[in-house]
Image (cartoon, rainbow, N blue to C red):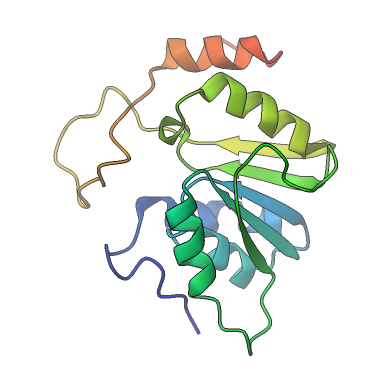
Length: 167
C-alpha cells in the first residue's frame, strides 16, 4: 500500500531518487534529511531499505508525516524533528540522503551534520536544484523549494566540510 503523504500536492520531484538509489539503500540503514511529507522515505522502505529515519527541520511537516503512520502496520520508517540531538551515534547510517539542500538555511552546517551521521564506509547523497534551469516545469515547486545553488556554491560548501570534488 502506497503512502498518501504527497497526495495533497501531487508527487514530489524527489521521489525519483528512490529508483536511482534502490541498489544503494537495499538492506541498509538510511537517514533522509528534509521534507518528511514527500513520500521519499516510504518509497525507500518499499524498495528494500532496512531502516529509515526521516528527519524534517519543520515541526509541522514532521508532525504531519507522523500522524499519517498507521499504528497497526509495521513500517521501517520513523519520523522525527531535525533538531540538535537526533538520539543516534555518529556514523549510525549507511546512507544519508538530502533530497534538496536548498531547503536548509545553513547548508554548510547541514553538510557537516550529514558527514557525522554517515558511516565511514557509507554514502551521502545530496541534491539541489540546477540554478541554470529556469524553464517550464512539469510540477510547480512549493514555496519552500525556491532557492537554487550553483556549482561554485556546492564546491565551496563541500570544501568547507573537507570534501573535494573532481574538476
